[in-house]
Amino acid sequence: MKRPYFYSLFILILCCGTFACTKSQNDWDETVSALIDKGAFSQADSLLDAVKRHASAEEHRRADSLQEIIRRWRIEFPYDSVQITEQIHARLSDTISSEQIARWEDAGHLEMRLIDGEKRYFRRAVGNLFHLVPELPDRTAASGNDPRIARLQSIVDSTTRFGAATHPVRTTIHYTLTVHPNAVPEGDTLRCWLPYPQEIAPRQTDIELLGSFPETYTLAPVGTPQRSIYLEQVARKDSATRFEVTFRMINRARYFNQDSLINRVQPYDTTSEIYQTYTAERPPQILFSDRLAAKARELAGDETNPVRIVSRIYDWIDEIPWAGSIEYSVLPHIPEYVLSSGHGDCGQVGLLLITMLRSVGIPARWESGWTLYPQTYNLHDWGSVYYEGVGWVPIDVSAGRQESDNPAVRNFYKSGLDSYRLVVNSDYSQPFTPRKKHMRSEPIDFQRGEVETSERNLYFDEWDYAMDISYE
Image (tube, rainbow, N blue to C red; front, top):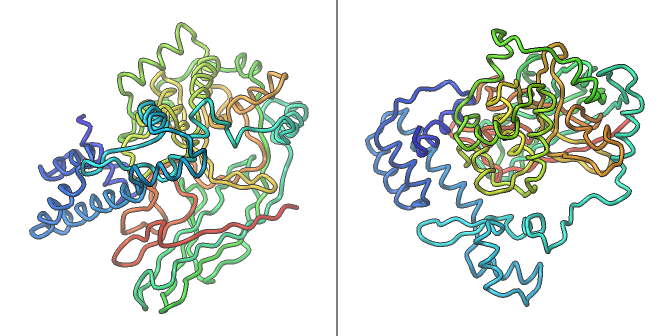
């Protein structure tokens, strides 16, 4: 598969929220995709404008989507060389030389891409230097008294039965999405999807919908892979449009002791539906490229126990530094991006782990939502691994190995999750209920919400979101 084709395939996922598609493309489609890939945005835009003058409805839709990809790339890389230098001097030191900046750029630490022949820099490039440059302090590094360690130790000590769910936490969440005033014309109907919890026994149960605004809603059925509550409202002139949902749930930690897991797993039934589904490629994200598959085989070596293979691949990915991410909607193949850039956020390294595991015949799948730790919450992605004779076991490669002398705590997230999670998604790039008509703001994940009108999607720069959390 030629690389430019990824964008053509990716557009179908943005528009449809599913991965069912064909390779039938027009010549202009692949030409434009190639131009986007090399950063010739103005040329691509001009070609798309010409295409739209004589396009069918479907071609017009694809052209609009590719132009939106271009617009989003420009949002992600807004700064020129002068602006990025000013930011570095303001946030680091005004003594940092242009030669040092060039070295960071050459090393991939200062993320840049050429757009129409000009160097443009990622909107989070300077902040990411603190995570990627060894001589700079990582401002997010955990302190020696990290409360998570004590919580994990408590979970390990309390799990006297293999894989038991412990430490229940009842959480109430009030979630709000607010569309900016005059983002759409007065009288337009705004269609909004807000995140809603999955029913995943025994980790997430007792889900109660306490209220919504507006009061009329459509709740996606239990088992919907990307679960939402759908609301509609008519926009009013000069007024923000607010959508709200309040729900309650119980979350539990679940931990599987690594040594016991090693001894309990059985040989895979390679004819089963689970095995065949979750060891398969799924373009455009889960693809067994030569270098990815070769690295996975190298790490697996001659080991045959899947738990040990997972541990080896996990440890290798854990060495990849975290960095703030480019929006997923412009990245046609996220695992390859991580390998090329040498860094990734939780969802990016999570997709890399899932892809590498599948490539060596270990079933793995996506899971995501939010972390809900007291005093802090954040979007987060993780996954789960299927072991024959045990079932699905949670795994969080972005959480990584913990600073603990206890091996069970140090390796907790290889086969466990804590209680402070909101699980919204049991898969990625799946259709909503009801289906979305226009391309998604986030084609992979679903955590912040999605909004559209009859005419178009509303991107993240046109609305805000907020979450209030209380614990019982």
